[in-house]
Length: 200
Image (cartoon, rainbow, N blue to C red; front, side, top):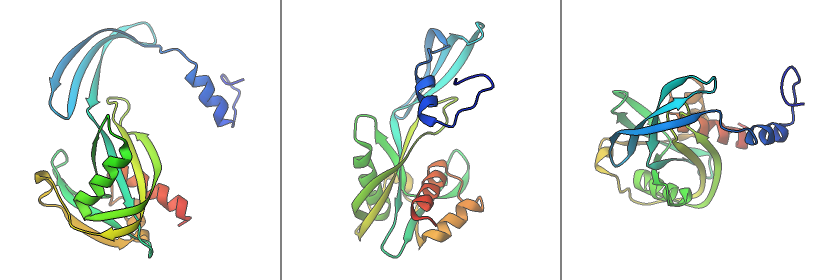
């Protein structure tokens, strides 16, 4: 039994159960409120799971969110820092950016790491997939672990002109996450996931 007071620890059964459930929401109409090259804001007239009418705002992202934990043979990693306009504050993060929906996330990850840090990598592994704010957006995120690093030149965008690069021991980056000094969601989940892989 998968509902009520019965509790199961079999994750596969839970996944099968919820995947088989029908969507309890009904969309009556959709209005495009705002759009630019990166996002689209929609307002949906809906019938909610309880049967009432209402509205639902949805932000559609035109890119995938891509993050990279770069790790060298001495377990150093790279953070990039920049002023984040929506927050009006400085943020230290793993190298990251947007990848077009139609392109393999790995190709976007290789490009972003090179652009922001100048690094190439010979070994790549997807370590985390996530939905970053699924109550209001459809943005999907991917974090890769990059190893076998070779240093080259950066190729940053205009919006990254103030970007700083910080090479530090991975354990120090993990400490910054645990102390709440790194708050970017892709960075937090990526660093914690790699820490689990490394058993750090």
